[in-house]
Figure 1 (spheres, one colour):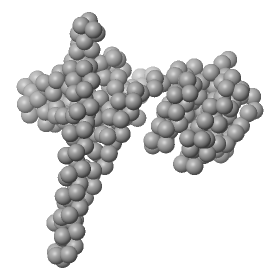
Figure 2: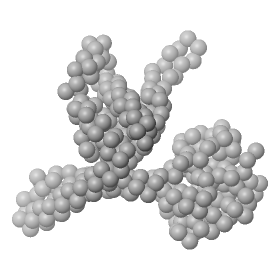
Figure 3: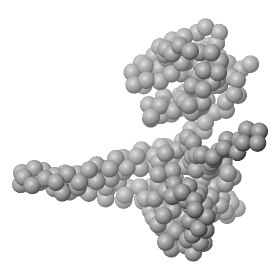
Figure 4: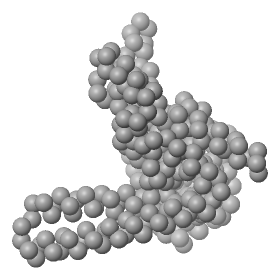
Length: 310
């Protein structure tokens, strides 16, 4: 059994456990991560494992890789289900760190590849773009229900500011994609599908860098667009999607509806589902799934051609 370091991450702390009984708490700062790296080396752990924690894991994950310490990010739902199955009924930071380490050992978790600096930057910029777009929608909604002149002037000023930031972010993201030869090729390929615009491509590249490197089935499951079986004996339960990357799922729902208006095969596929009496949500999922697998196949061919040329 290999030695894993489980890390339970919060905004302030990095609670870390290495079998059999080594536990330390470090601050979630650059200095704290450096001390965590020393703790890992001291106890000869071969992998640091942490849960996806709403972005709190990103800096420790990136800094540990810079220290040449392999890291993996795992789904918190899987860890929590494992904890219940193994009888961990209590929940403290120390216990959580221990459970993560145990989970990683039992599941033979492999390192999650570290993002390049450009990948990290693209991810940060697209995340900020989503925030700006969301804020812009909120401010515009408030403008419609505000009649006081001073209040409206403030809202208009805020809307103008957000529009400028949105434009600046869009230009920076476009430049970042154009500067990378492979990304530029993928951008051209993906945008050849009607309905897929520059912002969609940026989100796909930022939040689904595996696009074109995995099978269609695997990429759909990663995005949370693969209906999962729920059968037992003669019973065939309803297939439901579960987990996955919410940002990708959200954008694919939106883009698939648009693409179906331009693409005859998608439109025909949608009509067949409607004629069969499928619920609206099932149709949305099926369209998004079909479009994503099509984009994955196109990205795979582009990557192959780019590798051959290189």
